[in-house]
Length: 291
Image 1 (cartoon, rainbow, N blue to C red):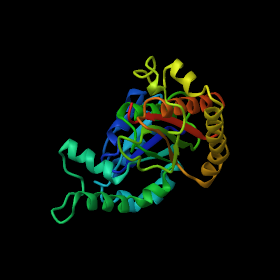
Image 2: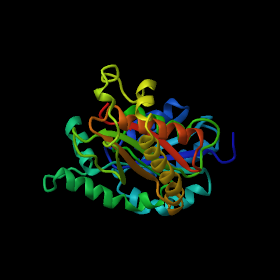
Image 3: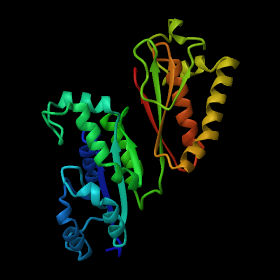
Image 4: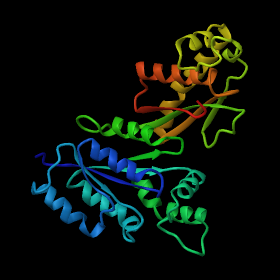
């Protein structure tokens, strides 16, 4: 039994993926307790230190705003807890509009439900209450554009294997089609609609940018190659500065007309080359919105 057990506190905005995070950690060998009352935290830590609860991977506790004392006391709680365990605090959030849509689909009430407040106001209130927790978090994970499986992959990248990585910046690379709907929310957009379009090639029309022959078509011209290199160079230049600034996530979208060929090819190549030649501290997630 290690002298300092690994403990992950999973918290954040309701509907952002907290349950998915807890289930993922459980599937990866963590001993998990969801919605752990803060009054029971120290007793649980005592049981872990005594060896009465053992999990080789570590321990994960889901804690949220349903506990009235959690948010206000969290900075002090974290300091005390970090003196006894190897602590990692994960804060999961998403854009307000996405959270509203998720609650509408789930047909369940927000934990701060009130007849006097709209759903958006309830989400905003929770965000304000949890601000001290977000500021103290070791990692902030934005699930706005992530499906459940993609969220699990991000979490497994952080917590699987021996030890946990140091702080990372989550770079979400998104392909999309302008003709479907605007891309929101993102920190940067690249428009590649000026490049030759495989859609008008009868053999490539039904394929997409993950297919090798489509990628060969997209990058066949000098214009396309120069465009890609400028996009890649910009992000290799800027990402270390975002990381040094303390950012936890950044969303970058590449758009073409339909979101099937050119944008997908660009995102796939950029993600592949960032995997082959990583930028320190950067964790890459790929989302093909309209594929």
